[in-house]
Length: 505
Image (cartoon, rainbow, N blue to C red; front, side):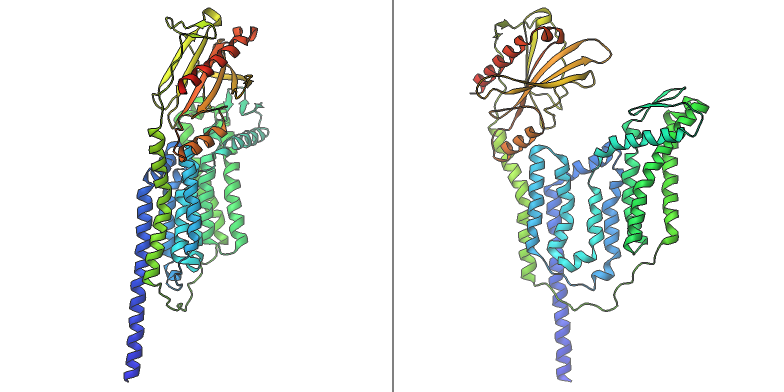
């Protein structure tokens, strides 16, 4: 009696101790995630803002709540597996931290969003191990749908939609001609714009199709078939929507095919297609699996190990935020003022008395901007030195709402370490005015052709604590004058570079 009672008491004590230390592990995970969200709250705010800004990813508001419900639905399985922390998996967390750091320094939102979303499943694996991760495999993977990704498919979807609608119109008596994304019919010229590409419906239907396949099918081939249908059906449906819109315009009038009626018809059509897709998949649904009957042996995590894992995770997740903060402060402290432009440049005197209608430059905020016009009449050359804010794009050297690009190329100056300018010919929209634009970017002490590598250098400078402020040197001249002789632009570009170098040295 005494021995049996002692044994029972020992087992009860072990279970209580195990529950206590596992509660310590749970508390460590919750604390770590709370600190992570607080440290990267600006990135999470950017993520949520992206969901709502374009309308394409509004479904993503549901992803985290859906994943929480899915985890709760797996509680019977979780009760039958033991937690086994994997501290070595913190290398994955460190890699995501590096990805976030590069994205923050180079202002690449996608990198930052991937990092803060993927950190959730990674830290679940770190704290709870392989068995728990296997039970939660789908929720841990499904959370990745919260990443706003897929805008690159807009143009291909526009093309497919245009071809599908024209193909369908071929079965009617409506004459049709297609050029690119333009569809000409007797009543009007229809443009399959970005908003008509169906990207919103495509990504949302794919996300919910994956969830439907997981909930209602158990065999892999049924899941894959339904997911494939969830990707194909919205593309075909969008082509039919454009087809019906054109028919409505042809037979009932444009007022019924555009405006509010057009938007209402689109949402009703897509809603109907989504319901029909889910109803079509229902006859092949399979019963959900039952949780295992036998409970796993209780293997509590030692309290000391839970504390160590929590401490290590805290260090790993905070390193990128601290590094970025310190490097930003150092780079800002080393920042330098914008240079000035001399009264005479390349033998031409500055004439700042009259207005000069230049190409404009879309900026996110007011920054030091030096601008002077050299020469007179049609041969005048405008020189701008524009410091960019973090959200400004260095490759956008003109206002594309007012100007369109006719030709582009490059112009290399001769001499040691002479920069290569990006060369554009612009024409004012709905007008005949044309300009020749030469531009080159400067970051720190380096001249770069505006392009993808500029952001990489900007990140490198910032992360090393160097002044990574980006500026654009831009020259503009009437195209007619530049076509006759571009030697004036070459001389002015060389003189402007030398003037900036003198000021910055």
